[in-house]
Length: 141
Length: 303
Image (cartoon, rainbow over the protein chains, first blue to last red):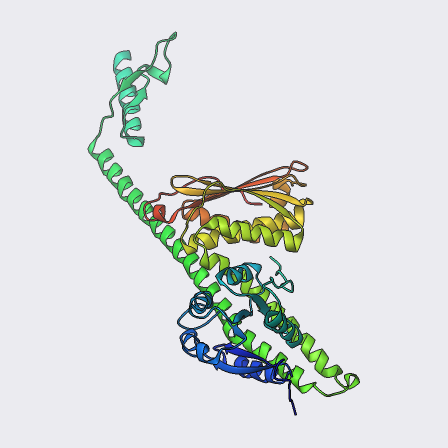
């Protein structure tokens, strides 16, 4: 049974349109003792409507979202509620995308894939200052 | 008698001239076409005869048909470039939106399944994880190769070229200097074409030139963008490369690209020789010029 200390438990709001990935992320995060998922949304509009009430420590968002780009979502979220940290969780290992996301207001960029790497990136986003992800690997030409 | 023969010869000469051109022509008004001393030839007006007019009309019809065919080919080629780009986008979307999430979810499922199991009993899970990581890397690489996001999001081709240079440095240790004083917005199909050509040329430098430096110059002209890709590397003998067995089948992806460029009014020319480096000049017509451009017969030499 997972009984984390109240003062160490961090809350995460997920924005991910792919059900398979969203469910796997919820199980992965809820399987950790120091974090839990407080809510999840499939679209950016849904997330913008629900995040203020949840007051999460971190918003973990995909960039490919229906109806509104992830970049626009981050900008609008920053205008709406400045408090939560924002980490982009993306399948693109392209430094250009990471720079775009950071420029739009994201604090961290986490590459989808290896769960240990993802959890490390999420923890870093929860506790540290904004820093670009150095785990990005540029693809071959 | 001699005068009559001379006049008949002149007449034949005029008729021959009027067949080949409707413009005024230089005619030699002496038998045998030779002028004594330094007397200049006389400008003679063309003389049209009924048979000549019929022939000229036929030539005009054929020339019009040829122009229409060229325009048709140009439009088809332009549509082919658009279709190629659309297909790249589609495949990239399938890889990123459909295939990659399955790998990501599977990777998390395996990690979850391995929790609490002693490490010595998780060899198969570890092996499966590595395979999935490899598959994920392939999908990422393919997605970026087929249609990098910078290409889709930045209308300025200079931004895409800068991005390409960064990747060439990161992945091949090829430092690329860029000389592009002005931004240049291009439609997606032309950006895509320019990107894929520049990428192919940089790959050639990285693979064959034996140097770690290259230079890309972008220049805006009225009707086209000029892309120069240069290196001070090994260079090569173009004739020798043309004679290689694979040359007839294209030899290089650049050959087909160069042919398509030529068909839409652009060109791709290579200047090189052993030990002297290589310079490739690519001319990409702007979209606005595609609807009215005429054929450009610039020789397309692609090694």
